[in-house]
Image (cartoon, rainbow, N blue to C red; front, side, top):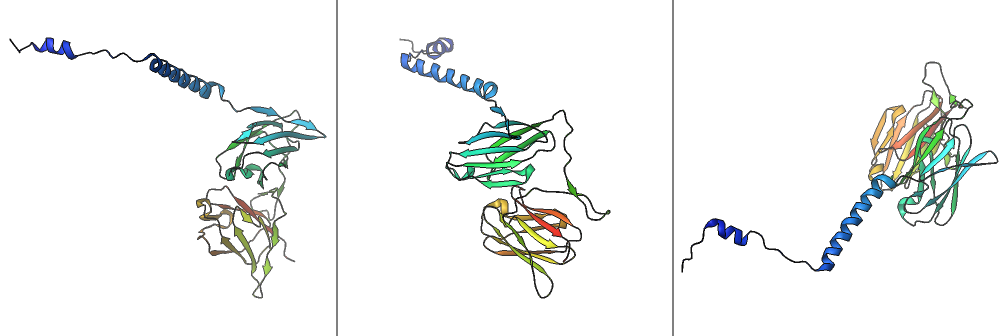
Length: 274
């Protein structure tokens, strides 16, 4: 018997061997494939953020937002120059969603679980403004549309003609504190760094040295650095330690200080000397 076979015949013998798959396997593969195609179509074509136009009630544009794995609706339509009230109902127990932030309106507020928390502000200019959770993972959009009337100008405060005009921030004042003068004449205040800055507003007098002691207890990397751009300050805040910053305000106005990622903010309010 001749055991030698031409190479071509041997290849044809072993090249393809058809394997019959059970019918249920074929069905499962087809189902999964169709599901993935459907998911891609939904993601790219149908998963647009749901929008809702605020309803005017007693002169206030009002809308309810459910906080549950995100924000629903996630796109809010309002008119410029009119008061807005957003009613956040938090259903999600995630720590990420326990705080709501509207950085363009300088608002940060805790959202108690299973309660409605209202936030009010007046958008002066048309545009698109975001709101997000404390960790900046979930976001929504406020679309401010122009009206027939001219949009209101943003109020400003000025000090001296040589100084840049400073915007008037609408930060909450319930956690404000006035710096205390030491016998040496330095204005001192302590700011605790936990979920945010407490107090959020520090009131000082113009022309006198200021020392702010930042006590950092929050280990989030966002709080690694403290920025005070108007005073050319950028310092590192060591965890569980107190870091002092000193400066002398020369002009009246309100000046921001922020974390390194500019997610958390506070205000230094400079008033006339008494």
